[in-house]
Image (cartoon, rainbow, N blue to C red):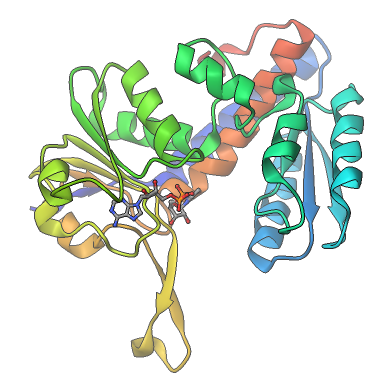
Length: 300
Ligand code: NAD
């Protein structure tokens, strides 16, 4: 048996098209144009690529994009002052501060400085609290993407056994809460979990966000399970030439593919969903902040 590939690129393209439709409806109706501000501190090459994509996709969806680039040695107070200005700027509906921040800056302090109503990354304590309470807030983008893809593959998650490997604030914890809200029975596994292979084998839906290349082997996967691989790891690829690298997930793809019912590839699985969910969150933030209904095409 070979698992069905869950095409994150195609699903993300559909979500982006829905966002563009929602933006057009808001322009034609209440005359609102959502705006997303992206802040990049320093010049980490991976962050540069992410920010460029976010800026490009924001504009492509018909939204306003505000880009702020600060030097790597920018004092924390200056970044906090910029966040405060963006909080007060009515043209800005979403604020995204690209992580990781330089070491001299306290990430928690910066995240906590973002107005929760504009926190399109869903990382402020306020939005994290709303997620725990099961109340509407702004939901972190990568976890949201994981659950959309899982639903795409299996339909209803109600009553299914879901296992999440990894308990980070950014991915594992919010994924587990979202799966629970979708009525799955959720187990959270982490680096101290005993007999992780056995825990994983109980999963109808297995979400892996451990940051460990190919940690999950084929014989850890229940036959027919849905596997969502969040990991993005760059590893040496001597077969491609000296010094060459390739991207792998946290799941040994070929092994798992032979057992699973459906599986996300890396790249092309969860990754593309993250930006699409960020754009959707910006529209949701714009509507809620301004007291308009979220266009039905975004299903909220
Ligand atoms: P993290 O390092 O913050 O957390 C990793 C978690 O995995 C921890 O809770 C840890 O307990 C657990 N873990 C580590 N080793 C383990 C092991 N051997 N067995 C079981 N559990 C183990 O990482 P993160 O921010 O949650 O990211 C996880 C992965 O997802 C990374 O590869 C990251 O690059 C990727 N990621 C992808 C996207 C995307 O858009 N696709 C977004 C965010 C993160």
